[in-house]
Image (cartoon, rainbow, N blue to C red; front, side):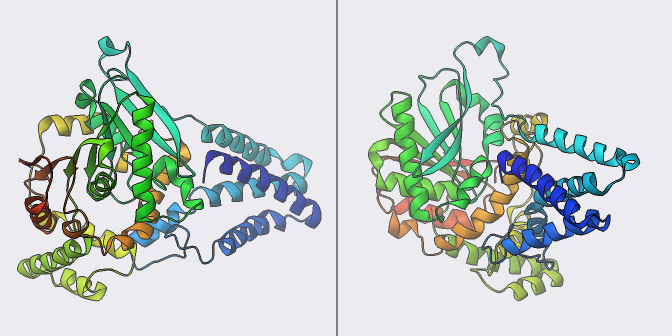
Length: 423
């Protein structure tokens, strides 16, 4: 859903409410019309493959969250608009105070929906001249996707950041945490197809790993042309590290180097190892409830995105306790970005909801397609420099395959950097 969709829902709901009130001429219309809207809305979504569009999965807290996220905008807007419209027709002349209030609320909501997103300027006012801080829409393979570009100058080397997930929008977090890097690089955050500001892409072409790789390559070309450079640096985090390797493997001439953090190599092998490690940790801790829950879910690949989300919530059991660098913590805390960065100014009101929806919906569509990927086979050679950043507390299930891939990788130059106090 977009702001325009929200406005259409308000106007359409008012019109339907007016028609229903005129036809029925009964105060029962005020109650029945919104209920009818909810029923019709859900009927149109029957068979949706997306977690936030499907039925309620009450067996999982993530299932409940998905159900709410898919309706938290449409149900209230549609019901309030239809209720207000029908009330205008059936309420008596002396009973229209509530109707007027409802109309004012709808008008305020309509204005609020269009509060624009922005990319805040950097904290150092001395660097304001020539500073780049902008949100840019760009069409990639038939779909409009959003970028946040930040740097002290527009002639700095380009660093394209591929966020994790798949499905995670990191525009706000990358803006805050990469701020020191913008003195040396033009940092480009990207809401990939279906994520965050690019969520409307889910209504078009089906998501696929191949299409994601093509989007990455096309974006790298577009950035190089826009800023008059020959190549870009590519930084991938988690899912983004897998995507980055595949893009650099396919079109190495576009990239100065590839930098991987939380390097993914073989997702299914990693998930199987995480499952074994969690079972072992639960048994060591005497946590029979977790053992039973994992046994009920079964070994990966899991049946639903909610099972993956459940497993991820137990990652801290395997990472161990650690304290990230003070400056990293300070930046994150002072920014007050909220969960998944939804309070960031990069997102309009509805886009804040889409940040969460995209994480569930994109993951459910893309992650099953990664089960056969193994970079030790699929990208044993890269014609670009490779740097792998390995956190001291990264999951062993991820680090071990990454190390195997790195050791056997044929590349012009490669470097493995261990980072203390990092996951």
